[in-house]
Amino acid sequence: VVTGTGTSAGDALTRHPDIAKIVFTGSTATGRRIATNAAANLVSCQMELGGKSPQVVFADVDLDHAVNGVVSGIFAAAGQSCVAGSRCFVEASIYDRFVDALVERARGVRVGHPLNDDTDMGPLALSAQLAKVESYVASGVHKGARIAAGGRRPQSAALAEGWYFEPTVMVDARNDMDFMQEEIFGPVVGVIPFSSEEEMTALANDTRYGLSSGIWTKDIDRALRFARNVDAGTVWINTYRASSFMSANGGFKESGYGRRGGFDVMEEFSRLKNIMIDYSGVMQDPFVIRLR
Image (spheres, rainbow, N blue to C red):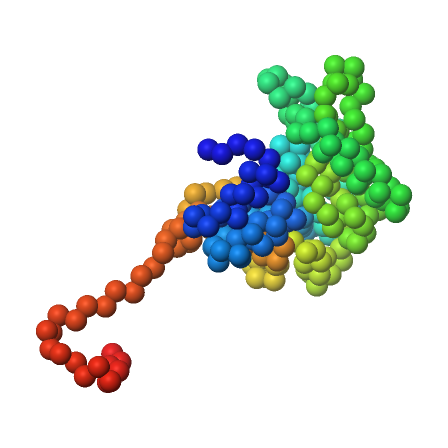
């Protein structure tokens, strides 16, 4: 165990010539620096980086079930998860009902000390992270989005000294807004309506990340089309944040490369050798190449 900051201990470790493999989970910016260091020694890397995952909701799904999944996907761990479903796309015919139900659930999330039994969502990890979340929400409002729930620090005196932020639902959003494109790492979800599968797929893929995704529908053909067409390493259908040690997890695009879990991770941590043995004892012509 080597302790220290990334700029000192982390930089030295990833540059060291005796390191044979680097596994990193964190931001895309830091992943780039580590990969650059590793390239100098031709070291293999496995990167699980940022995400801006879409959750897609169609009109045929059970509304309460879908709302519950979206709440789990964004407000669990106060949104401090690389697979957080922070972009929510809802079929236009149920958009208003869905937003109303999501807002009601968001307002009912109990924010508090993480060791209290009645707490649903705890604080953010750092004061700087709290300020970052606030700045993204403010930027979204400045560009025309509207806060439908949350959007501020809790007003309770008991939480005034902590790094808490209310579960936040943003509407009237566009997919090109900063809070819809950048990984916030906080409890903030933007909700946008769509009218067709084609439009939904374009919105879902309109991000530089490709880590995770989710779809809520009773139409299995539609769900499988989404699974084929979405540019994400994990696709959840009628669930979210489910995991298994036997599934290969990892991302595309700026979400990194390499896989964890399942048989794929065994290959990630294996070095293959080609060993050829001649048992014949017969001397071969050194100028003849034998292909078998």
